[in-house]
Image (tube, rainbow, N blue to C red; front, side, top):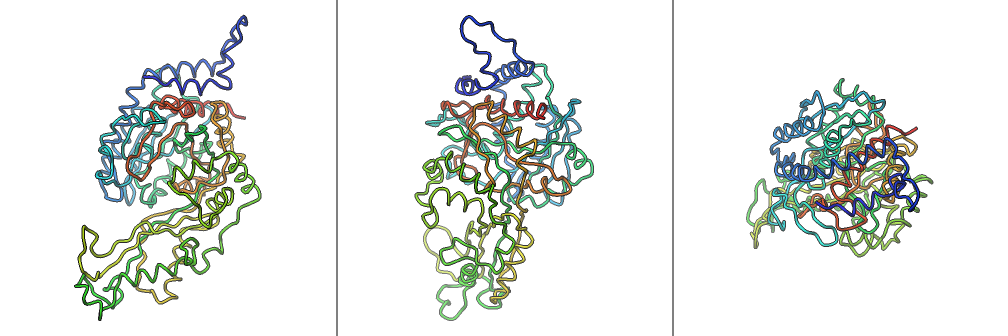
Length: 508
């Protein structure tokens, strides 16, 4: 195994102090530096086992949207946690898929909580270059060796890297510098509808209350400069279906009929299209739901300042290339596009399903049409209020028959810039040589609001070095052996979690 680029990138800050000019006596490394060196050696020795841990985990897909292998996924997560040193590991039942909880108490002064998910998105094997559950190791130009598979970067690769950190600490004969609390769910990919039931269990809540904050492992380093974002929050999300049917409408067919009947029979599919067009402006870019913006909090002066700084540090060309787009909405300049990304609530069509969608044509008039919708929410919006406004909006326009079937969601997340967790992340990235950009809000979503809102009320956010991409898409991957000197491989990513633990333990 070779992870030379990772080693070079980590030779910064305190670690670089050991590289002295010729003729000078080498300074004795600090206890932390000595620990880190020993742990890194153990992480390198455990590389093959760590890779296999990711591959084996990918081979077991727990898909909440399909209710597939949820108990198996929870049991596997429990085994992974126990193997990494967590004690009192238990399965937490909910009204949906179970969660997993465990504690690693080494008698340290401070506690850190870790959020994991064991579920993954659906996949179509026909769209992949290699089978999505085989977790093949392939050479990816510009990146090095990567694991390709569903869940590789979202989230099994980064999570397994954190587990590898605990294995390396133990193999080096050390103890984690902080105590750890693990909280895991199996419904993140359907909007975490039951996650609060896990977190508010009295003994889980009591453990979380001891913690400095909560991290979700991440692998988002920029391939151009190795940079990372430290997000002070994330948008909320709501997922639901809008359903128009002849049965509910009282017009049109109750089942699919011959399309020649359209001359005299109403169409539920067109009914749904008409309802959808009322939700947004004609260009589809801005919500037009009555009262939708009344609770939206504008960007603060500090948030605008952070975005302006981010615009100078982040590369617009890289962002467009990663997304496969050439232009932003309204041809906005880079900084304004970033402002819109952080501040704008959205109403998005994920998919439209009605009638026949197979090869060729089939002349039917569908009796039912479904639009799969997601909303992204910004402060101070709430999931319940947003859904209520859409319901009232449709009813006011005569679309009382169009059903709203909510599957999951949660409110936006915010974390204080001056919290110990955020300060520790910034300090750790600086020492590890990764340019860090403080950013107001992740445009994506995760159920961090369960941690940041009462009764938990903790800082929470993403952390980790490494790189992967393709979440929710074909050919999802996670870098394990980097050929890019700016991006960490598996060992470098593993060591970033070790460094953060030490930083939180020692931070003022």
